Image (cartoon, one colour):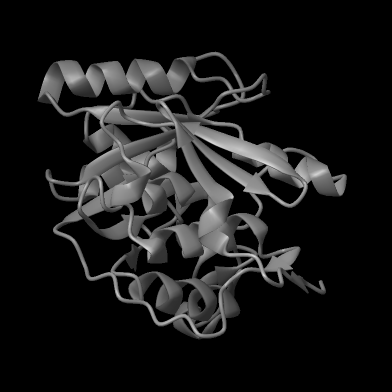
Length: 247
């Protein structure tokens, strides 16, 4: 797909804050996030805003400045893009206890249901004392401005809330729940060296350049193994296997 550059437009000017609402004014509309009460846009490193913009608009626009030299350094904690489904829950069980748990909540009417995830998050809070931060946003509607269905603009857009909050939570990496079916087994049946794929070569160096290593805790195991990990972790009766149906 051919992309269009954004001449004479400072990417950083696309971002504004009004109260708890973080607003992204892209060339065809607006997207927003409801952030923690003490979040301040001025405290976000510019590198994070550049990569966040890229993850949201790169299918249609080239937004990374040609003279950009990343300077953000790694933080202290890993972060998990925690949907509350089987794969991300398996990651939660495998990752260290200081992992920051961040959930993307759709702020608009969607086929995806949050009841199952909310049940899991409450259970985790009650049994471990750990908090899952649920960040509401409508950024999946960005695609609709190009006559496409709701969804993530890019694979990295699924974790854009972690990028935007990387300084707030002092993150050093972003974990995604991608099992072997999406990594080393192409279409689930043919082996490939995932480190040599376009996906990895596109996103991993970009994230690392802004102090966020790409972490794939279940990249070497199957969906079935992820289910067994969840069961072994005592969450088999808590996790919802389908996020589009009631728990």
